[in-house]
Length: 450
Image (cartoon, rainbow, N blue to C red; front, side, top):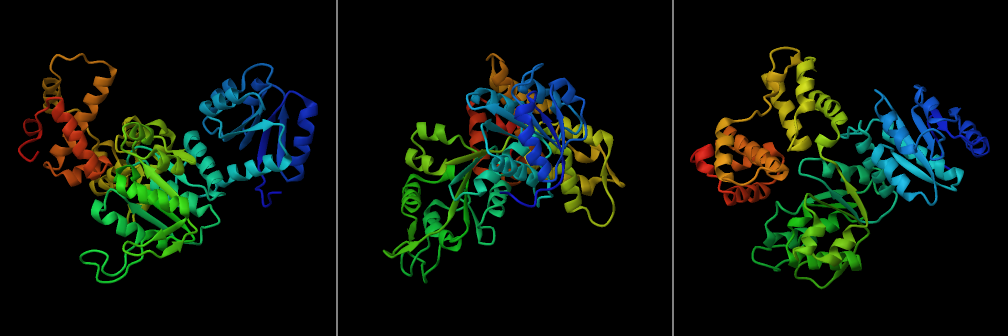
């Protein structure tokens, strides 16, 4: 039975007194203050609860409708749906509407208390993680579950969403938290060296190997290894990685001695690995080895409630001695911007604004957020020619325009541009190639540096 539960107010929405009584008794025994109501409308009038348990048997509205209404409150707290065993679709709809998690009837009291304990963990201050939106809390709830196992985790999301931060959260919440956490960026290491970096090597294994060297898997033994940007890994290294995951042992390059591993593997990518498998660019068997517990970080534009708290986090991180706050127009600008570079771009914007500000407040002008550039627009329209401008084309145009703007800002320097966009230089090269294929003259749009 979970222990050390925090004492909080719980709203329990259940029309049946017989079903409600044992749960109320259980929660009361654990020190919770429980408010029991029987209808959805009565529940929406309650404001003090930090956790809401909502039955799928509401007489006046569906659980999905209740959660959608609940989420529109200024401080809704956590919502947990309670549905019948055969209502899996309803549970999925509740999660899409904003529920943090759900329970299927029948369930044991220990399951409910364990779920509440996980939910409460999300309310505690977390290092380097800000999660105010229900989407973020859903992800962290799943991450907390994943942390309790040793299964492989696949973290997906756009560049700059914080996949490594999420991976570290899984490690920190796991029984391995006092063991090593080793992160490897597979895209940043030359293909010819990646195998030796991951698995280690012995003296004389290749030219320049003047001594033996342990690999990242050995360094992480007992703990967690993060294989970031795993979608960039070559087929040859994929095959060797698969063997390591299957056998739970590793051999250094040039050696035949197996080293046993007790390790959790977390992989991260901004690619659609299913699509990469379909294209034959990623091994299907390796994909299923990695995708045991999938976690997806939504882009920042889809969790707008996180934007201002994350901005304040970076202000506190980078400000010097003086107080600093966001002005109203700065807050509005931050919330309305589309953040193609996600949290990494937001961090860069806040750092820059702290330098550009002229007082204790950061203004919208200090943020220097991108605006439309007529030159870029003309270049893109010329490149598009007479093609139809449907929704996909408009979205692509906006993305290309933003890239051109950043290239102009940094004088064509692709490394700085990639950092500002929150992507790898390799990903930027792919984007530039796609722009050229669309007929966009990069040199005319941004100058000879392109």
